[in-house]
Length: 398
Image (cartoon, rainbow, N blue to C red; front, side, top):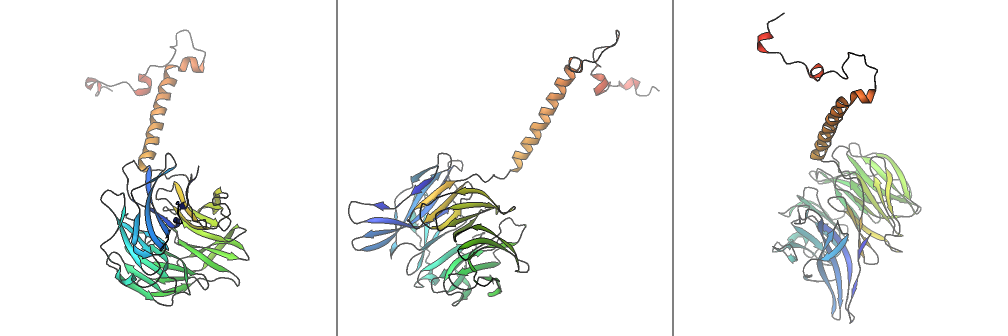
């Protein structure tokens, strides 16, 4: 079953279009069965277009959407939200509008987003940011502008760590490494680069063959294999290439679509990748084998998939399309075993083994059906197996 949120139309000329969406990793009171989704909308009115944020609640058990409180006006900003970056700690979201970026926080009841008192001064009047992303630990925020200006800030102080006005011609994707030391960037036209945040310089330009374009980038997340995954398009066919972070040399690539990849995502545990196509198809790839584990054909019928994001628990996939529709597809990616589950299985096996041994012992004569002598007992006494306890008086007898 797939849940979908489409544009809303009113009785007049007013209607809203969903322009961006993101999971909001906030703990809920329903035993992790529901999670919040932030929807950015462009509300068309007779006097222009206004940006609006809305919270939706997705229930993993019932696969249903529900509204969560009232909509929030985008702080007086004109035009729809361009992109959303949710803080990993669930503190709030940074939203890019046509002229600036603003920070929104949850209210005390976690039912509505409100404009924060925290003003993002370095991102006022900078124009639309095509890419916004937090580091995995939530301590850094990167912004890639439509004008190719790259800015990296320490969060929440907003201290500028990296400022490169001509980093790209125009940004297409950004991603932090797991340790927040590196930042990968791609553009609509031009090379893909890797930046060292501490040294504030690009340390690598990813090699590509003539005619190739590197579109999207994601660092590995499992903490054991330091790789950088990028989608590569050539002649309308798309593949995923892997670079070694120690040498920044390409290890290889594999084709997955006979059409361009239009969206790219990675699960929080780093075990799965997700790709979306310009024809609305979605595939989930197991990283270890680099094989498609699950395909969602026509997830967005006849529309280009623009964004893909795994939920924090890896049980659902949030995607956006050119139809201004947001969809959630429940997925089965093989959840990780937890320590208590492993111990429970081992304990169960030990108990079952003990029960089987007892049953075998009690019914061994009828089970084995061995011929027994006239004076031979049907089975040995239990002391023959467990041992005959020795009294203290007999311990010194030889």
